[in-house]
Length: 202
Image 1 (cartoon, one colour):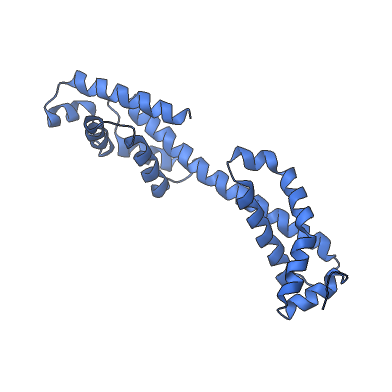
Image 2 (tube, rainbow, N blue to C red; image 1 turned 120 degrees about the horizontal axis):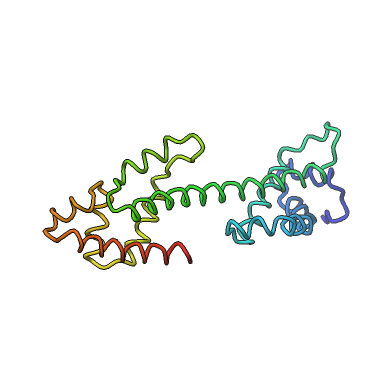
């Protein structure tokens, strides 16, 4: 049976009967709509670094949600409702990605203060950041991921000093612990800072 000539309401009825072909036809019919809506949000999703293919999948999920949740008794066409669901799904995906990147930037800001202040304490800095109501709470997974990225660029001796710094030690305390003068620790932190900046500027 061919469904291509059926209108949306007929196709939706068939979808409610678990007819996969009808669902696929609606998806094909609305592909142009999805691409058009994606084009509208291109600047936003490029800024936050979402791949077009990933966002297209989110838009499809929005369309499928519209298929399953559409109420024909409401004073709205499926076309209008589907487009609204597609937009909502795209916007939510962009927001979630933006919020995740904001958390990483917030963590990076804290690490920046840590690295640039030779006598700063890692835990005090993060405590200060999370106590501010206008800042996002620290996402530990994002912190760990960012620290691993930094350490991948460091030498063995730099990692040793960096990890001691992360444990809350000041430069003077690290100096005593590793039996090196304070100038050695400061020079090492300078190199760590330079590599950190290179990562941030990429």
